[in-house]
Image (cartoon, rainbow, N blue to C red; front, side):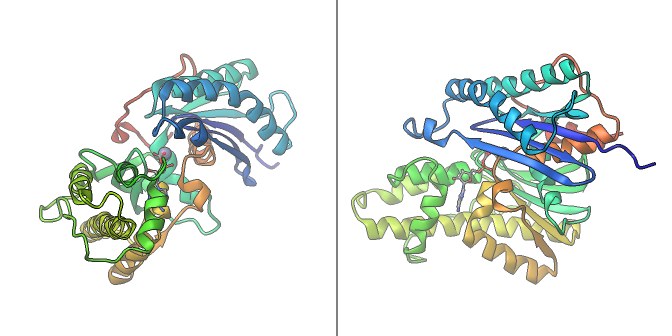
Length: 344
Ligand code: KG4
Ligand code: ZN
């Protein structure tokens, strides 16, 4: 007799993406959808938490119906378990996903589990056709987080270093704003940097002169503000500045990743989060990997940014191992990654 397939429905609503996915142990990822609220927040120059929560309420139910249809799941209950992002993130936004997921699980009488958002990002490369085996070193670089994490297995995470202030993506976005680029400006700043010349503007490499693996990016933004003075309406200088700024962030991330590889002896470097899309960062990390003789692994672009497929993967692993959440629903704005334990 073959074991029954466990279909897991997962919801992600920690910030400004509403996402739904279904994952099972036979077919892997069966269906997934992401709705991004960027247009809603763009005019405000950043994510407005109240608007984010309200939009999750509006989008989530119809997206669940469509994702279940896409997965060909019409039975009652349609899935064997439900997972949702329980934190960290915007509390109002998290509460929408947590409330809906827990209610569905209660109505369907199936188990439910709350997932740490960063666990999702760290496990996202496992959704790829040639997934990296454990253990690996992960560089997580997103709008909200910059971290080096030693990943020994599901739930076995050691934070080796993290940003003491702004995340790398946040630094990109804030400097992009200074340059007059619309939110979120990271990718636009990177595009502008393509036409900029290296070495015209030199920015500090924060904390590279100190031992350890922590980061600090808020000083870079101030340096960019000062460097821009007198060049506000000079497009060539702005491109040069974007280039110098990007080089500083990329250099810092690559140097610390190299340090962490040397310290841990891990053979695989996983890069996750939206800033992982940056071409110059990818090129520099490829050089680091070649020098250290290690392999790099990236989730596909749509799974670098927020999505529910990664939450479905993590939720499936935990539910399969017998982990149960239940009532009440959990939503935590802050949640240290190292509180997690291996499932089972
Ligand atoms: O992982 P993600 O969706 O953020 C969080 O959920 O926190 O990543 C979004 C971040 C934004 O800060 C965005 O500006 C940045 O990733 N980003 C980039 C690039 N593409 C996206 N930063 C630099 N270069 C890029 N090409
Ligand atoms: Zn994220």
